[in-house]
Length: 193
Image (cartoon, rainbow, N blue to C red; front, side, top):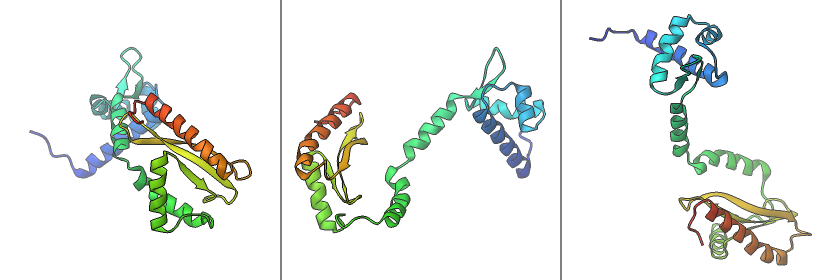
């Protein structure tokens, strides 16, 4: 039968265990004595707090030296966290803030119908063109890079002043940039054409 532990004590223990974990994250390779001194707790308390962290593979203790370091369970937690991130959701607020601070140029496509038509054209040709939409004197040609799930993972681009990247030059650069993106994508395991 488990003894009832007051909630306040459980919270304090959890906070101390998290402090131990955080300290090991920042200062890997500490012995029990060093870790206890660093977090200001008795060695017996640190040992008691570290035990479930070691069991959960959040901490690892070297059998030879006794030094603590992060365990592979922290990697699994981190990967699980990253897998739940949605780039659009994470970037939406900052993108909107940046847009309002920067104010786009007179060339920026703001009409929804025109934007949809431009996106359809971009998909057909395999590359996108920023024609002075972000900076009045800059053109950019970009293409998506796909990962092994055939999901967009990154992009590659060429940018320059409009005096160097003319409209005619854009038509030359577009296929070159798109080709580089396809080759990179294939190296990442994509089946893209």
